[in-house]
Picture: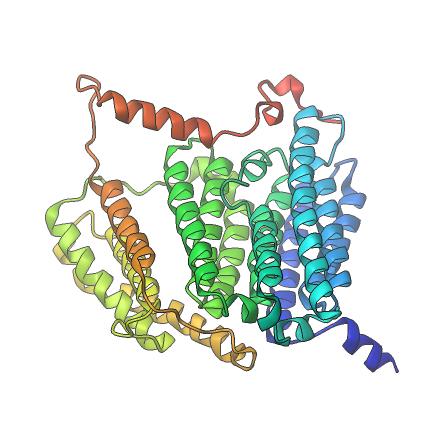
Length: 449
């Protein structure tokens, strides 16, 4: 009886197992850090109670098969996160950050709730497994509307542009809270899209829309990151960029690759936040941009090696003729940038070891994608799409942005940049700033007690 009851409410498939494992691991790391970080804090005990409840609620959310339970755990997780963000109500800026995030979450919850109502209206089903397997041919308009609303709800959760402001404004949160937020809950949008992937895969135009939204957010987030001087704000913009790329992978029809990205991003971003306190003492690598021609050519060679290593380990091909090509371009750019950071000095002397390291880099990441793909294979969540003009435009934008980042002119004080460059820079910088009410302008405004 109990097993039957649990099977109605939960579905412990490959996605649920991967996400529960990830959330639990990150939760333990954050808890271990917070054990010392928050020592002596007046909210010490309540923090760990709320963190435990948050991990449990997220575990329920990613494994729920009932849309009502999914929705309730989704809302509960966000409420608990907001409480952790505020931490001390006497700190006005932190409270403003939490309220801004709460408004964003409420808006997303409304979109998701309406989407679930539409799906239930069509199918009379509350089971996720039944919903994604239902024959919707006669009710395509309602289903398309539901999927569009789900997409907007996912965008609010994952801070996809234009729903990014709450994340940039959340930096008043204690470091452990920022870590669990950026490494865990912000991935909820990607998990939601993956849960309904069988339906999205039936609408190629909707997948293209997701791809464009994701690529646009990724480019904007990357540009904003380069403009920040504050470590946590740089990490926030980086998260926006990474969430955009994760959405883009969903739009390519490569949902398991998006899940692999969630796993890697979650662990790496948790590490970056938990180690952000040492950023001031970190020895920076002098990249010397723009790079010398020899270093750039060698980086391209290494990038090709890295992309072929990724292709070999992940079972993909440069010659597939479908949206896999976009992923291959990204692997090439990532591998080239990875190698360039090690080729700025003594290029020829370092070429061979960097060439080998870049190949290993591609192999490791490709193997992780293949591992997740193999584990999730029974779910049938891969359906590459035919390439279209939007995909080519996205690839060109990625390449040009990377080249612009490397070779943009380094204007000296005596050489004033063009007015349009200055105006564009200021507009982008302003767009990447947190809400004014969430900024602590002076240390006296921080509530220590």
